[in-house]
Length: 164
Image (cartoon, rainbow, N blue to C red):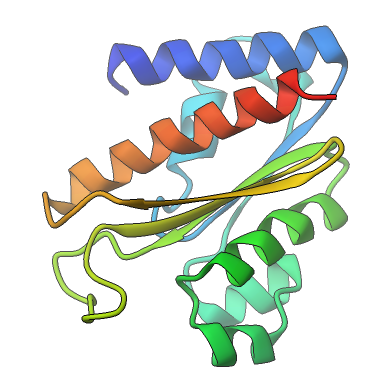
């Protein structure tokens, strides 16, 4: 279903989470559940994937992973503070010790001068820190931006699972 490199990254996440005895959660906006989908494609993922939140709307970000509406109003849904809040909220609303969050503009529309198509903010939380990464993938097509985002998100999970 996914390209081989994504399958390999997902398998690495599952292997590391099993080895460390840690559960994982996702909070996804522009990827619409693709990160969780890649993880559930790995046999044995049920041992470590607690849940995935698809928080496509601003209301879902607030309702499901407790992102304050004021944070979205101040910074916009596609921002570092919101990505961090999504990752932290996924931990708070799950049994997971490690989470990843993705929020961005996949295109083809929706971009602005400040937040162009291809801008994606990522955050990963746990077990001892919250990290943020911003990527500007460019306007290379919705599918390409989303798949590139899945790769980054899985790599962030690997990083967090190897930390601490």
